[in-house]
Image (spheres, rainbow over the protein chains, first blue to last red):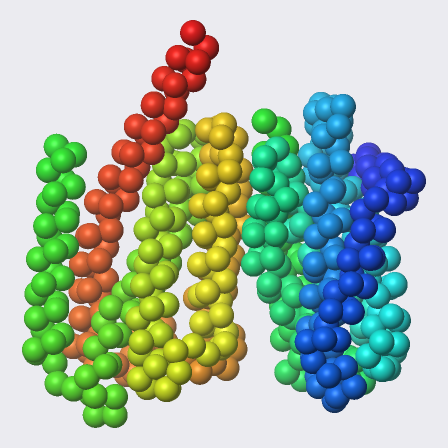
Length: 226
Length: 228
């Protein structure tokens, strides 16, 4: 109970400080829109191809834009030695980590919910046909990506080359989740339900979330305490 | 004693490799459908075995490091990863050469190949992370955590041929297929070549561990000089 309260307190703190400054979320949404614009030059936006690669496009946008939010997650705490104070406080490393993951997942979901309609309008794609399934995939993948991103943000927080190292480490680790999400999103946007062969991808996505969340929760205390 | 062990292992590995090469190149007939190129499998498969074993060793020693906090486990982890990365590259290269001749293409984005490539990228990231952290304790701790995360990609690469339909040939060795997929003489040769490469890799890991230890001592002395 105490653990849950501590987790939610950290999440609330992170969300409040982000929503007051709106530094990361503004940058992330603007960056996502820029990538959506750039994609229109890479292929013919009016062609049928758009529907076939929609899952891939969307998750590339979310992954790149998400990195901006995740990058800030722990580095924001560096000013005035906030991170040391948080680690020294009676909050466990796992609660601190999960609190940050929840806050980051909410922020990333906001970015995704802004981008989806924009994507639909720009590329003339009706993405609402399997709304329930799409939100399930969105939530599961966002959680997995945020867990890895927040963990690696903690791992690289003290590095001089933090901004360079984080993408190099994070994107290859995110691939199982991204791969599954891209496949499932393409199917769902095409209006088909998740069934048959696609269940493998859903299982992969759930497995990805469970494995990386447990690994991260088990190891984060070690990373934070120096 | 340690020196003798190093040279002994390397010599045994070298001799076994020469003997294996002799049998592979001159003893075995060409394969009916693939011709001479099939012989690359005697290096390709053992290379991946070495690479999986090296990553497993690195993962294990990273867990031990976080548990015991002894620097020797960190030395072992980085040495094993470096050997693993080299063998991953050789594995990809030999596979690519075989693919060019049999499939007509150097590369295909099948799950096995893609995952092997992801594995290489993740472990290169591990080596880059080590270079980016100056404090030895911080470096050992953070890279041990990354190494444990990275091992998940090795498991996926290993199981990729079972989980997905892929252009990459399926498992050949009896312990995975139950036998019958490969001639016994070829299977023995794969295992012998694995042994030869393992005997050659062990001294490299040991030398690399000694270098890490020396490097740490030099860094320590340098810090003390700065303090003075």
